[in-house]
Each structure stands twice: as C-alpha cells, then as structure tokens.
Image (tube, rainbow, N blue to C red; front, side, top):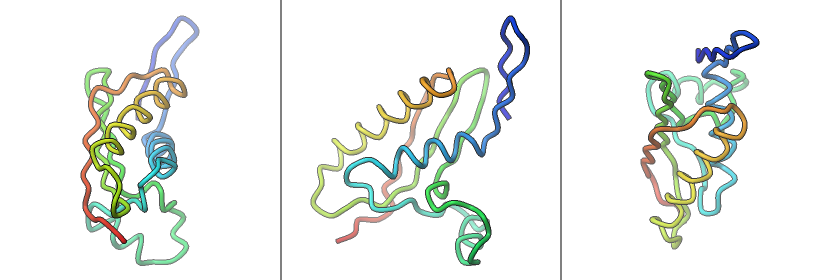
Length: 118
C-alpha cells in the first residue's frame, strides 16, 4: 500500500490499483499482444477460471520504495514490430499515466519481453 501525506490528510492507494492501471495502459499500446504470468501464483490464478483477477493485471509487479515506484512488466509482442520503439512507448505511457492518475512518479520501468507471437 502506498501512503501519501498532504495538507488535508493521508491518501492510501493499493497495489492492486497500480497493477490494474499499468496493465490496462500497457495492453492498449501498439504491438503488445498480451501480459504474461510471472510466478506460480499468477500461473495458478490464470489457470482457474473466474478467479476475479483481470488478465491485464497479470505480468505487472509494482514496488514502492522510499517514495518511488518501481514497475516490472512481462509482455508478449506482435511479430514484426520494432521492439525498441514499442518498449520506449510503454515506458513513457506508464510514467505519464501513473503521474497523471496518482501523482506519483515512476522511478524505473523494467520491460521483459517473454514471447513474440505471430
């Protein structure tokens, strides 16, 4: 949970909010086919139907350390796209969307391309 303090009071933002926000942003980027599972827990929840976890929240890991946000993304790209351009676009969109929605700057975005699909 991320806690922000301002002159009015405290604001608590859950990690689930960030994973859904970032996952939704990434899946709308050109060239991204899908989000990939990252661990055993994600793999099992993806295998069980109707667990309530959105498919675009898979593959997103968010850490909040010392007032900075660190994001890890695991994605599949479309065959034939310029991988470097798509990744730069993802990094820029994730930073912009998070800054505009929550007012928190993203320190680092790590994008892992796990798969390329035809």
